[in-house]
Length: 244
Image 1: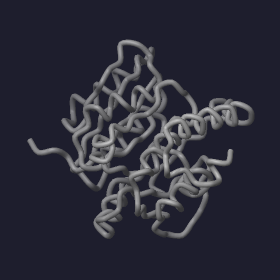
Image 2 (image 1 turned 60 degrees about the vertical axis):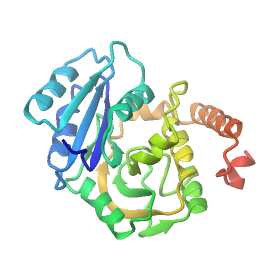
Image 3 (image 1 turned 90 degrees about the vertical axis):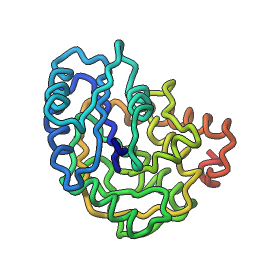
Image 4 (image 1 turned 180 degrees about the vertical axis):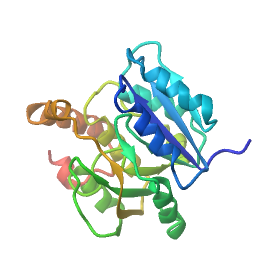
């Protein structure tokens, strides 16, 4: 059996209200050559049963189950470890996507085959409007730092071979800005990254959860992330990031 074009990793923990709508939105994709790897991070509600229903009726859906709760970074890493697609995307278990989510990424890669990353527009949290453009590495880093691209994992389509060749993973020792840290690490291997303003991803703003990360927790996590990057001596760091 040939490898799918896309792998979509969905970390999930206690997503009783949202799991079905998330997975149904992926099932409705206009691009059909994909696999969905749902990582159940030891949910205590019926999330596992909802995932099992999709796995039973659609062989593109697969589940990885953690025996204990390990956090979102570990869940994403578990999904990446078994992914087989050429392209790799992430969708959070409480979000959903438009039917052309994967098609938009594919069209961008086909139009610019030398690209190493594609970024899409999104609805919701910290959406910064911008016209279509192709970022250089320096521009990409600046926009991951603060800007249109952002540090999110879910508005991006990665090339899986870059991740595997350079053994990139989410840091399981931090629980905030872990996706921005991953984005910075990946950007070290990007020279061209198209941004497509079409909004194909719906981020579900959950007031209490998001509010808890505003203010001091954000700046504390950011200092920790910058320290990690400096310890790794990444040449990709912009002067702005290095000076912090």
